[in-house]
Each structure stands twice: as C-alpha cells, then as structure tokens.
Image (cartoon, rainbow, N blue to C red):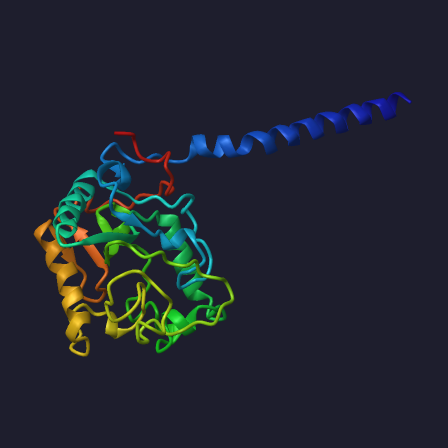
Length: 268
C-alpha cells in the first residue's frame, strides 16, 4: 500500500506540473519573445485611416495557410516609414482615395516559412491563383522567394490604393475555386483595390511595375501609387508594383524576428 501511495503522489505531482506548464506556457512564451526596438510602431497609432488587410494572418496567400510569426493582423513599421505613409495618405485622401496595406514588417520566421514551403515541390495548393505560369522549382532562381527579405528590416511595405468609400472585401473561403491573379479584374479574387492589372503577390512578370503590357487605367493606377509614395520618400521594387521601401532605412543590415503582434512595438 505504501508503494501505491508513493506512486499516486508521484502521478499527482506530475499531473500538477503538466497543468502548470499548460496554463502558463502562453504567457511564458510571450515573455520570452523578442520585442521590437523603440523605433518601431503600429501603423494604426500613426496613420489610423490607412486600411489594413494583412494577408499573411489568413489562408489567402500563395502558401494557403497563416504564416509563422503573424499572430495578429497589425501593420508594424519603423516610425519614419509609418510617418511617411501618413503623408502619402493625406495626399490621397484629398483625391478621394486611401492606401491599403497587405504586409509591413515581416519576421524572419515568416521568411523561413516561405523557404520551407518553396522547397516542398509537392505543395501547390495555391498555384492556380498565385503562380500559374511559374514552375515551383524555379521560385528561388526567378527571385520570387529568398532566404532574407527587406520586410524584416522594418521599412518595407506592400500596399495598394482603394477608392473611397471603400467597398467591403469578402473573405477567402479555403478550398474555393482559384482564378489566376492576372485574370481580368471581374474574374480574379475580388479586392476593393483600384485595378492594378494583377492581384497582390502575383508571381508573374505582369506584376513588374512598368511592364509594357499593362496600359490604360491599370498603368495609370500603378503610376498614381508609385508617384504618391515616391513623393513621401519610398522607392519601388520594379518587379512588384505593390512593394515599396522607405529610404534611408533605419536598420539597413538588421533582420528582426519579433512576432507581428500588438504587444511587440512600444506604445506611443
């Protein structure tokens, strides 16, 4: 009986220890997560009128699932980049438009998630929408995926322009039929953005900002975005009409890995 009692006490202690780990581990993890430097802010605290549709917190992206490190749909940027976006937003509001961000600061763990996915050639669940003409084995060679991203330095943002009043964008339904990201606007996944000729994160040369096949209203919309942001100090990545970096960067050589969460940046 003494042996059974000892065994019972051991099991009780083990169960209690496991319960303590289970109940305290989220807080413990949060306490040990790296924090953003003081120079980072949540965009909403600087430019609250900018629309945010943080795609990587959702399954509607080229992988098809929420991305590692994106805990909450919040845009985080270095303060100078956020303030520059606010200047661009004021300019667009006077014309009846608003900026809309898709992605801002991106933790290194998210980039690592992209890399793991790109190496798994069997996972092509979102190919029909995001990279119909690209062989997945060429994603690194063609420059669509890399082991480092300027987003992780905190001054790069992916964004578009929306006409006001902004229409509601319906949520993506996992498993729904996918339409190529370069299809006519009336056919591809609905987005309240101005028609830029392709959707966001379209792995195709049609996404090149000045691709000569993009003409008319679509080209004018891209130029409006590019010129407005250039006036605010942003430089466009020529291969992606949506991708801009504020110059000079505060952290040109540092790739951060704090999570995308309201608790990461310091409060204003």
